[in-house]
Length: 114
Length: 116
Image 1 (tube, one colour):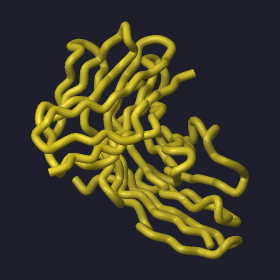
Image 2: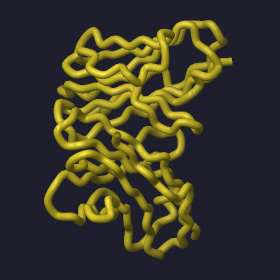
Image 3: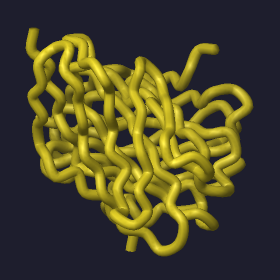
Image 4: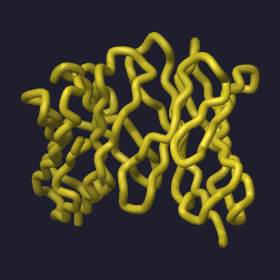
C-alpha cells in the first residue's frame, strides 16, 4: 500500500533562513511525488512534482525538492524563507502505472517568523 | 483560465438535511476527484471520475454519500441525510487525463460544510 509520512507537524524558521519540510514515502514501483501548499481558507496549490529524470526539482515561488530513492524521501526546500511562505504543506505520492490516485501526507505547518 | 469552481463556498445545515456540493472542472480536463479534509483524517479521496464515469468510489464513506458527473463540466456530491460527523472541507480537483499517474491535479477552493 502507498503511504506518505511527514514527520513534523510544524516547522518554525526565521525569515531569511533556509527551510526544509520533510517527506518520506512508501510505494510499490516507481513513485510520482508532489508538493502542494494550502493557505488559510484556500484550496491546495501545486508547487512541484517529481516524475523522472533529475533528482532536484524546481518549482513555484523559489521552492525545490530533492528526490532520494535510497532514502525514499522527497524533502521540500527553500534557500531563504519569507513570512509569506507560512502555510500548510502537503506531500503526496502516486505509483507509476496506476491511475492518478494521490495519497497525501498529514501536512506540515510552516511558520516563518520575522 | 477560471480554474476549478466549487459552490457553495460555505454551507451550514441541520442534521438530517440533504446537502449538495457542486463542482465545475477546468475545461478540457477529463478526470475529476472529490476529496474530504478533516483535522482527524487529513485529506481523503472520496471518488474519482474519468470521462464522466466513476472509476474508484472506494473512499465514499457510506451509502449516505453519492456523486454524479452528468457531463464533462459538472459534478455533484450529495449527502443525504447529513450528520454532524460529515462536517469537513470538501475539495474538488481535476486533471487533464487522469489515466496515468504523474499528472498534476488542480484543486478548487473547497466547500466548508458544517452540519449542526
